[in-house]
Image 1 (cartoon, rainbow, N blue to C red):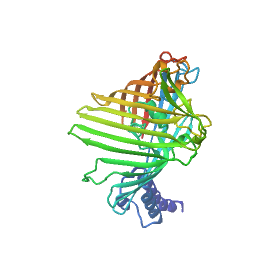
Image 2: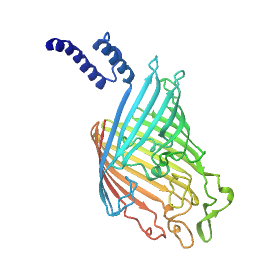
Image 3: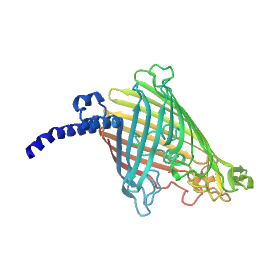
Image 4: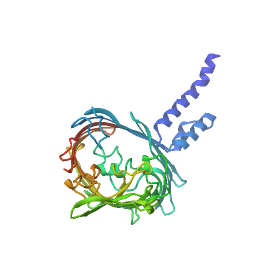
Length: 442
């Protein structure tokens, strides 16, 4: 009896093992292949085939970034993974740990019709969402797409470059301040021709409306929305070896002014200072945030790798508080400060010997208040504090791609601040940072 049951179960068990193996390892295979391998005349076979058809478009990716850092002194303030604790000048940390699920659905003509993404970030500091968005594709002309959810703001080049692909450990100070965590809740329309012979196939235009505070806040706190748009040239082959790309970005937003006090820069023969507008009519108005950006990228291909140069510049108006130029995570209960800003990012990347070895130099600056300079900050009689100091960062490093799944990084950041009249900022602060990171991805 036992022998009979065993003989009956063994063929079914073998089919289940084969089916499970195929489901786990052959997402790119077509259903016809499964028809050849699985007995679809049985209930088990039919069930396995239905599961495959439902989930064959799912794709999992992820990466972790464990790293070790050394600061120039204990308690250093840093945009390379956050400030150091008061008694710490070196640390191990898990900078990012991401798991991402992508799902693509095709129509009857095998054209992409729906796409959505879930992404989580888990570190020793907690687990957070990063991407939760869906996209619908128009397939009559194959030109348009509509995206809605939590996704990266379509502004600039560096903001939209993934952390797993970026050659330097972190985005620049300006990106981290004005576009903190990069993402926001909103809706966006995209023009991006998908036909290979379309005359505008190298053009991409994104435009959308967003809540404004991004992941800094748990919910929308006013009715104002940010409009963000970007027109970009995708990598265009100028010659066989040279690719050129670039873009123009525009941001027009703001948030509810909760107090009557607004400070803006002014100046006369006695110096520069903030002056207050205390009109009761300020309450309820839209505190302005307007950014303009331009970027360009050049890439030369060689037999041993690539040479890349990137340049990006932003300028505009930012409203925030006295103590920071970040967009507030909640409505301010204190005076609002309006400042003119500018900043830039420059990259030079060079493969050495082959594509596994890469040298990099990065330079960025962020000037949160272009109306005041150097020793004007903190001068006697004005109320200009350390929030208005300009910072420049020169970084250089080496990246070694051990294989397609592992990359080793060594980078050193030399951070310089303006010399001001403020106590503690009359010279350069000791806040240089060395980072070594081992990135694993799948």
